[in-house]
Image 1: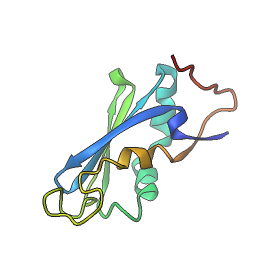
Image 2: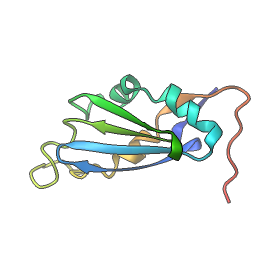
Image 3: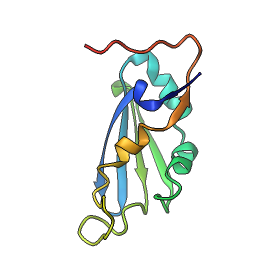
Image 4: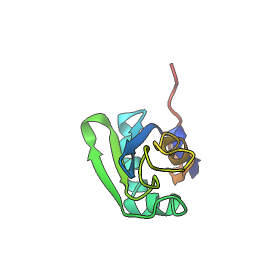
Length: 113
């Protein structure tokens, strides 16, 4: 079954010079393996193909049920020199959460409190 990533996780992003940094955090521990399987460096690179001009690195944070991505050469030189609308990469997280991912047919949405 295909769903949007925002049904499984939330995200936060920002800038690290010319690189965008994006952390994706599962709402539930049982959904963390879905992030590991579905959010590969290659899939994230493809999702941001028109924005990210460099490599994508993934860092796993299992104790937080999270993965962190660094998208190199994404911000047009960085916040102080870039002419991009989002020079600090704040919208990268929202764009990441629009990605469609596959989940098992038995997957159920989390209950928001």
